[in-house]
Length: 287
Image (tube, rainbow, N blue to C red; front, side):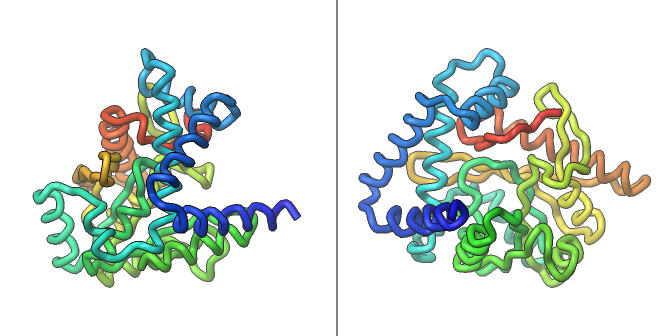
């Protein structure tokens, strides 16, 4: 019964957020974020501790702003399936130089690996990539209940992405992603939280944590360009900044993977430090 209620809640969120006028929906989602801030539940407390690691001298209003940013992500995610290709393009910003980096990578036919932390609206970024007629694949965590996982897979497939499950698929996800890179796909991976518990240990904002090795392994195995992607919210857009990551060319594979993952962590930290309110990390991160 609980699983069915959770599934119904997500399904209702997609329907209601699209049905309401945008100003009304924004007020509702902001109010929900402010209630979560006032309630100070476990997720809010964890966000506070994470932000204190990023900015030890922070004011507590940063936690409120972080929850409002997270609510904005959900509102926009729920509304994305009803938007047009032109709205995907208009709702996303990137500098001409960084756009050219992406276009060149896709034109060269090697594909590209886009690794990013949980910042801004990564689904809007994916919809923008697909709207540029670039093929894209991503990995989905197998959520519980299964019905919620299926809803998220269907949602992202509707935006134009191919989705492979992190666990329980017919083939290991890294094998599928490497194959797609050779076919010229963009591979997008969330890279700031290790879900396998055997990721690469890195230094991050003065502490130790583990991050997934997948982006580094794929870039090293295939030679595809690797970019750390920083996303943040402007009043009207999700805005992207790219940081090119060049893996070491020599040495043992595990050493190269560790060094590359540390470079990604350092790149993530630059963006998060610039706009910590848009980093949606409500889970335990540091060891």
